[in-house]
Length: 156
Image (cartoon, rainbow, N blue to C red; front, side, top):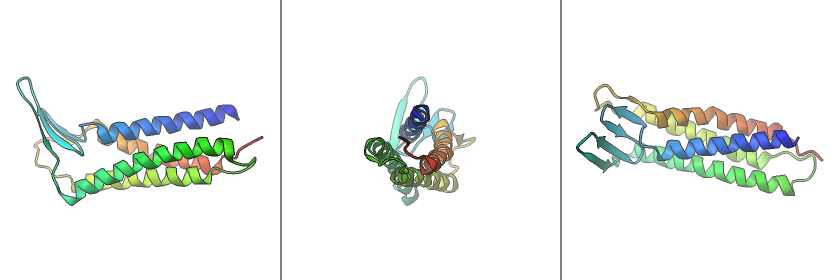
């Protein structure tokens, strides 16, 4: 049982790191020397490194808010798991932790979908960057983790 709890906690930490990196990294959209993320649009080459703030459009602010909420709910879920690990009665389930984790996965999914649909193709030959891919990888892992918490019981 200890190995299962340790494995679930390790999976939770991996998900939290994925969410933090995907929210903070500057590679949601890349095209040569230009990269865009949720916060900045940066031009980098041998001579210049110039960043401008992201647009003030509503959709990018929604994605920013959803990704921040996903990180917060994932963190609160981990805190709730550790708290319930010591305070939950024997045989109880980690429902509170599971709800927070599933909500975090839904926030990531909604943010990534909005970014996919609303991203403009103003950069020629642009493609999605690694931060965008990390967000999509975090979504199913977060959902699976939440489902594991629903099934998991605290043993004696």
